[in-house]
Length: 333
Ligand code: TYD
Image (cartoon, rainbow, N blue to C red; front, side):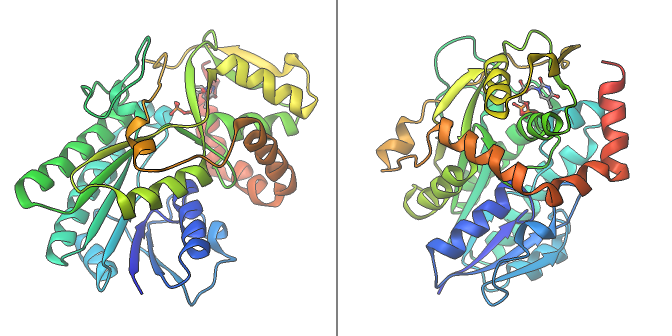
């Protein structure tokens, strides 16, 4: 009956993973350590059974809180991170503290507690922008945003703990996630909810940046697969089932929602905006993983979810913190 520590399990990907784990591994119990920052939301896990899942409020950079939460856990899946590139451009300090120091604090606790497996969740953004081809796990890390740099730094700390201390670590690097419970500052939920309100979506620059779209439930399934079957010390890319330019994505969403192209507002580009991400996922496939979602279905379901869950996202968009971020971020654009 494994007990798993999930960090950041009130966030978008973390809460989807917790939800998947509860359904897929009925004998496992979950300790969810989450600081409940602006992007963490207890509502994301409110319906999950208390007998299987317990949320502990705490910061991963706080060694005492981490040590206590990890007691009795044989597995750790580490999601907790500051993740929004635009916020890291406005102020990088929380990114360095949580993503780098937080990861080191967790690794030290995992060594002390003799955890059996520690899965570190990372991102394709650590490879930087690639004009063509696919990024492989052994490629150079060339992060361009403060967010990507903080994740690359954490990946290297994880690597060093494997080489130096033989820590039982595995790293996964995923592409852009989409699906239910994504905080509406990221491109897709911002687009869907703005269109629902007949408000424009601010498209950065020429909209020809390429992203690879991964349904969050496929991501959750892939993480569990790698946690159970992956080799210690290894890195696994987790890409999606669809790659496209932002302007194509916007057109698709407009069409599916029956909205007009006048809702697209072209605004000043993001500083240092990565042009293209694309992952080689051969290693994950060789480990036996297969996607369940195709993008068309995933996108339709995601739009339907935001339509059916206005009570979930509207309070987030009307909160003071969101409004002041939105003003700062888009005012000058
Ligand atoms: P985002 O969801 O922030 O993910 P990432 O930057 O980590 O890939 O953005 C996805 C793409 O959408 C990215 O190329 C930036 C672009 N984008 C916009 O054009 N306008 C926006 O308001 C946002 C938030 C993103």
